[in-house]
Length: 192
Ligand SMILES: C[S@@+](CC[C@H](N)C(=O)[O-])C[C@H]1O[C@@H](n2cnc3c(N)ncnc32)[C@H](O)[C@@H]1O
Figure (cartoon, rainbow, N blue to C red):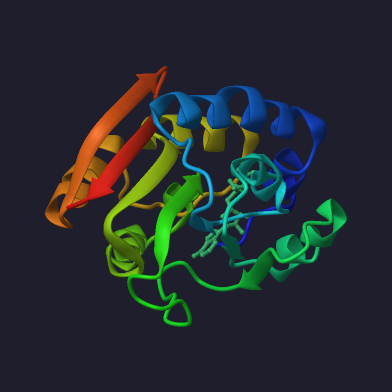
């Protein structure tokens, strides 16, 4: 789903970048996102600040995809030569080859996507065997709360952290580490 104007602004400002760097990325790192020289895919890369954070891992290659061309057009501001940013729907990433990525990173997008289960299936297809998937998501109740408060207009997606965990396991992932703090879940799952 495309972001409403209000959420677009909430995602593209210094406070959001502060949270992404000092809470979410730090959490990912402490769960094991530390490998250098990897082929990384970021799903829902937004305006590209996640790529700035991931550049500290000196990836062999980086692809960021997002549904909104308005987001992709903002990625040029970070000047990351060789990094690829593409407009693409995460539920159909056929342009990305099977078993081509070592690591996939998702900073809070599955709760935007009605077909989020298809995204997990695509992650399974795209990762190499033993590949690593890092996901940060709010649970369904927090999303509903934010919508009541800020009218961000998320889709009525049938999404919760419990459903996410079940789907990961059904798709041959092992949840190696997870952290759930005040309704926000951070996961490191490994493809078997
Ligand atoms: C909450 S924002 C997060 C953006 C960025 N990852 C961040 O943490 O600031 C969700 C992002 O997911 C993108 N998105 C929503 N549905 C999508 C889909 N079906 N495929 C790819 N990206 C999608 C939106 O355009 C938006 O940039």
